Image (cartoon, rainbow, N blue to C red; front, side):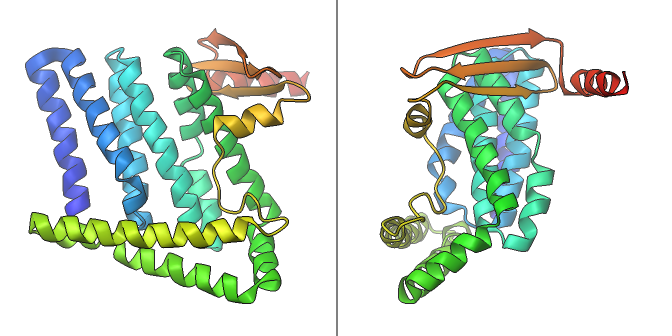
Length: 274
């Protein structure tokens, strides 16, 4: 409840800032809130909290776009994409399809906003993580779980226990009214996350599990493009975009303004009919 109230307070703060200082002031408040929420993202392990965060930040981004504040919109959408990515890795396997369907539009919208403010690296990272989420679902993360369980049963059990301990403690700080107690709860959550991360590092040393439960960064994308360029092509509600990651890590990009996802879908349908 406290976390949802906080999101409502942020929404109110952004609205008041717009009323008092106009769209630019509202955008500054939005970016500041997104920065703080991004720092706290790993503390929000509960799926309901991550889902609320993804939905709200996507809504805030759309409001910023309506005011032509693309930098703030990019901040909000990038946070929404991070929350959705973390949510997929937190829910049960049989719930992942629903999560992927619910937040399927966020990666394209986020990448479009990031591209508009020249954050091309962040745009392709968002797209690659979304691609990996889908491919992992199709491939079946259960295969990786089974591989870890078969390779090292004790490590598997330890990792599951560490993740459970972190998940159970991660929202304790939201229930604390005393600032000192809340800070202590956050520290305890951080310590448990560090322990889970250290165990995950051990998992990554096993053959075939080097990328288990990891999100990509730009360095991984650059390595993937060392032999030949990698093309990312996507649509949002406002445009169709392409970014080509070259072998040297540089990027070429282009967009078709006004050719959004609905128009491109109609064009594809017409082409198939012909």
